[in-house]
Length: 366
Image 1: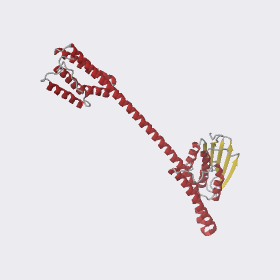
Image 2: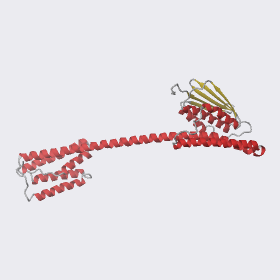
Image 3: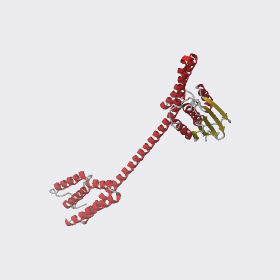
Image 4: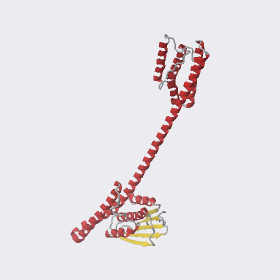
C-alpha cells in the first residue's frame, strides 16, 4: 500500500480535469485512433506526475486498447499496444523516480501499464475474431440461401419449360387439326350439310379434348393435387393418335414390331409426343403426303420412326421452317429421357424422324 493514499486537496481538481480530458479523447478514437492513443497515454503520464504514489486509472486506456485490437491486424495491434504500454510504463517509472516516490510505486505503475494494455488489446482481438467469425457465418448462410434460391429458380424454370413443351404439343397438334377440319366444314356447308354437321360435331369433341388437355397443363402449373383427367398418353395410345390423324384426312400407316418393352413414364409420354409432333409437322409442311409410323420394341428400348413423303400435288405447305420449335421440342424430350433423335430431309423431298429411348429394367431403372 503506498504511503500516501489520498492526494493533496489542491491536486484533486487537476486530477479530475485530466480524467475528463482523457475520457474526451475516446470520442475521436474511431476517426483518429493514433491521436486518441497519444492523448490517453499523455494524460495518464500527467496523472502519474501529479500523484506518483497513487495509481489512478480511468476507463480510457481499456477502451483505446480494446479498440486497437478490434480495428488493427493482430500483429500490428500487439505492437501498438506493446509500444503504448512500454511508453507509459517507462515514462511512469521515470516520473515516479523524479518525483521521489519509492520502488513500490515504480513497480505498481509499470505492472499496471503492462496489465491494462496487454489484457485490453487481447480482449479487443478476441472481439474482432468473434465478429469475423459471425460475419463468415452470416456470409455462408447468405451464400447458401442464394444457392438455394438459385436451385429453386432453376427448378421452376425447368418446370415451366416442361409445361411449355406440353402446351406446345397440345396446341400445335390438336388445334392445327381443328383448323384443318374447320376449313373442310366451311367448304362442305353448302355441298354436303350432313358431312358439315359431322365435321362440326368432331370439332366440338376435339375442342373438349383440347380444353381438357389445357386444363391438365394449367392444373400442373397451379400445383393442383391429383390428376382428374387421367394419365398422359404413351406408346399404347399411338393407334388413337393415328386414327385421329386419318380422320383429318392424313394418309398415315402404322406398323408395330416386337413385344412391348417397359418404359419409364416420362420416356413413354416422350415417344407419344414425338410421334404427335412429327405427324403435326407432316400435316403442316407436307399436306396430303403419305406418312409411315413404325414402332420397334427392342430389348434395349423403343425405336420410333416417322417418315413422310412430299406434299401432295396442289397442296401448299404451311409457312415456316421445319427446324423450328417443334424439332427443338422433340430434341429436348429425347435428351430428357436419355434417348437420341435424328431428323432430316429425305432425297425425295420428304422428312424422316427417328427416336430411340432406353428401356427400364425390372426395377424401373435404366
